[in-house]
Length: 181
Length: 181
DNA sequence: TTTGATGTAAAGCGATCGTTTTACACATCA
DNA sequence: TGATGTGTAAAACGATCGCTTTACATCAAA
Image 1 (tube, rainbow over the protein chains, first blue to last red):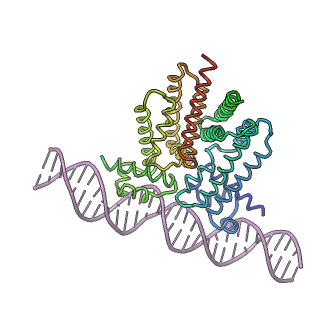
Image 2 (cartoon, each protein chain N blue to C red; image 1 turned 120 degrees about the vertical axis):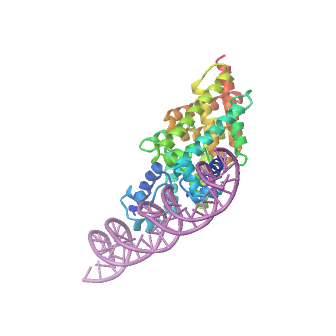
């Protein structure tokens, strides 16, 4: 019951550092010290492990969203991402990376990613409505772009990308409030 | 002199569809009909081909930037991306994908990506200065986030991501003009 | 007409891939 | 005590990997 989690968390670190397709099961398991037999007992296949890693990451991210300070609900998105970067390699969004590397061969992995992104997009809309007092799908999408852009550039520009995204989101929200009271 | 280009362009399509590490040289070459011998004669190694694909893509993108209508220099960034999406698979930024998949094993590929992104970041600053009349590094970074976010979400949300990014960029520029004349 | 450059076809190199298998260790609990 | 569950170690499976090699075709320039 415990090794399963260790394998998932080790694989998460391995995929962050070396990509999904560019690393073999032996190297993946070196991060947790488990044997190949244990991997196939718990996950059935390498792809099965990838799916569980993504689902684990999704749940962990949703948990961070739930814990976050409810004031400034939109700005907290970027703060959550800032906290996440401590102790992690910033190689862009793990979900989009998985989608790019598996799109041609695994519809199931694509579906897990799309599910996560759909939920995240909905969450942004929800948070924006709290901040604004009314829903605004266009502005929610704009903030989503800022978040994804900040995540993509985290590896190249560091946390400045998060500062910039947070600031731009606040600016757009302020402008929206002023022009439609 | 001609097969070399055919191999590069075929490989570009192959990497877009299947990722960089998730495809072998045989499948890469199936897109151009070339033999493995020709590949290794021209590029020396698989990694050598990857580098040439990225450099080719960089030059093609810079050429599109040069051709673009000079009025509305910032909005044109998104229009260029829109034109690019015709006839291409939208699997996120190819440079960032390459960086993620090769970061652990090829410093040269990482360097090519970083070079491209640095030049693109500079180009955004240049275009913003034209639109604004004065430089603004913070706003340039904000627009960069919008662009990268739109690119990342192109596969999931289609060209709506580009519309949204372009609109948000215009909004931010307008706000900046009004508050600091 | 010969030479050299450029190409394909196809077999094979050792290495590594994902996966399975055999054999064994160590707990917990009936 | 003995069955069961969970784990490791290590060898081996066929397939595929990046890459090299041999053999041969084409064609323009010298």
